[in-house]
Each structure stands twice: as C-alpha cells, then as structure tokens.
Image (tube, rainbow, N blue to C red; front, top):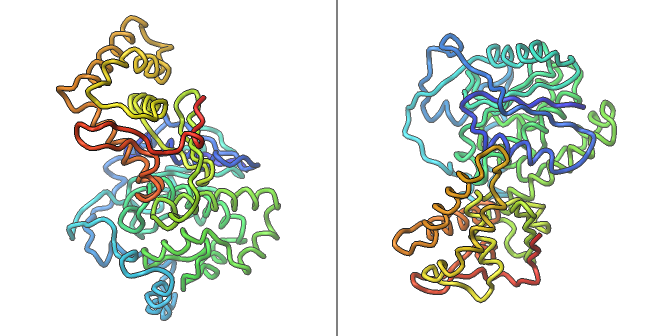
Length: 400
C-alpha cells in the first residue's frame, strides 16, 4: 500500500515534516511518499463566497446526507463526560465569533488530488491525500472522495481548539483513519451507513459534534464490528502496521496532555545529528533547532550545571556542537564559519537574552511533548543568575 502525501502552500514545512516522520516512525508494509517542494495552490475561484463562521457552525460538521437521523447526538455529552472531565471537553483555543477564513468545496479539494495524480502518473490503487489549511463547506476534519476513494483530504487547522497536543498527532491519525475506512467498506454508501453516529471510541466515529474527536484519538481503537470488516478486506500485516501507528500516536497524545505522568522516566537518546528521542515514552521526538540542540547537549554534558555568565568559557565547545548540527554541504565554508561564530558569540554574550530564549524554547518543546510534570526532569532549569542544569539522572542519558 502506497500513500502519497501532498500539501497546500499554507501548510508549513515543519508540521508537514512532523506528520511524515510520525507516520514513517513505525516500520511496516504501508509506504508513505511525499514531496514537500511540490505544493498545491488554490486560485480565487477555488474558494466559496460564504466564509463567515459562527460558533455553532465552527464546532459541528454537516452530516454526509441530509436524510440521516441524528436523534442520539444529544446523549454525547453524558457519554463523553463519564470518561473525561468538564475541563478537558472545553475548547482549548479561544476564537472571536463570527470570523472568516478560506473555505472550499469537497469537489475542489478532491480535484486537487486527482490533478496531482494525473500529473505524477500515480496508479489508481495508490492513495493521494491532501493536507490543507483550507476549510471545507461541510466542516469535516477529513474525508475520502466518493467517486475516487483513493483520494482524500485532511484539514490541518483548528486542532488546538479541540485537543491539547501537537497538531501533527491528530493529522497523522486522520491519515491512518482514511486508509482503514477505504479498505473497510465496499462503497461510499456503506461508509455513510456504517460510521458511528454515537461516539464509541472507534476510528469510525462520525464526530459530527467535533469535540467528540477527543474520544477516538485517546482510544485509537477499532471496534469489534469494524475490525471484522477490516480483516475481511485487508491483510493482517497492513492492519497491524496501521494499528501500531495509531497506538504510537495515542501514547504521544496522552503524554502531551498530562494523562500519563505517573510513569517511570524514559531514557533520553541524543543521536549524532542532535535528534532527541524518549524511547520509553513511545519514541517521542523532541524537535529542536540547531542552536537549541547545541545548548541542550552542552548542559547534558555538564550535569554539575553552568551559569549563563560562564558560557563564554565554553565557547569553543559550543561552536563545535553547533557546527555538527547544521548542514553546510552546499555553502561557502568561510561564510558558514562566520555565521557560527556570530551566533555563538551572541549566545554567550551575557548582555543579551539569547541563551535564556533558547532555554525557554527547549522547555516549551518538552512540555508540549510530554506534559509539565515529566518535562521538568528533562529541560534546563535554574533561577536568574543561578547555575542552570538538567536534573535528569545521567544514567538515563545516551549521547552519540
């Protein structure tokens, strides 16, 4: 099974890269292909005229067909509150309503996929999934094309309104959900009649009340009935790979939401190019930029701690770390050396806040990934003018 991931020009390279990395992190027979340089552009005519959203429209999706009966929807609140408290169900990002944004029809979004398929000569049995910041008139998180179910889209905006975690986690989850739905049902009519109107924590929950997405993201499950259908149409190897990816995403989301805090600390592995992995926390990767990796590695290698005012004494070591984390293959080495010297000089200069800013970003990255309680063991801490250090037991640290 091959999946081609494409994006529009408003989807940042960083989040697109995160989604790809999450999907490719678990080895298996599902192959994920991407080209971050080939972006899908929208013309003025691709947008619908009515772009105004009030709060009621924003938090609900339109049903797949007008004739559906949704009498059970009112019981969602009682159902979900048995599992998650009131605080967790509230929107996590505030919007001022009404507001306007780019909106397009499903037909337009699917046409973008099909045009890409034709242009790149992609076989009809391979997926083309568009990651897009553009909203859709039905206000869905994701959908497959009724006419060509190997085409689909995932809306990449608004996730932080419904769940507190990195946007890349639920986006990657929706990619897997679409793959399973394509192979679970014979046609689109079966999809519409088989999706769960009442959320039960299955990948096929319809989520017309959009905050109910929380339940299936936190369970990452396929109910018994849906699993039976899936196993009849997809090999065990593909099913197992998809489930492993979903479980990996579930664990990452639970850590980032402080739901898994009373657990033993994970090892911290810092690879040769500065990639930071927490193996026992579902192989969560802590994304840092080169200069942030530089100062973090320095503090990992100095468990006794170092004041910012003393960083100048370690300027040579910092420059060496930084050099190893930037790609200078295509650049003028003298120019690269000059840039490194300038940035390290700024980092060690006590008259500015460069070091404090990098340390704050490192802290933010850990908190975002694994929650405040666990993160405090891993990020650099120390009061103003005091020694800064990483508190983690160095027996748990592996540096390449």
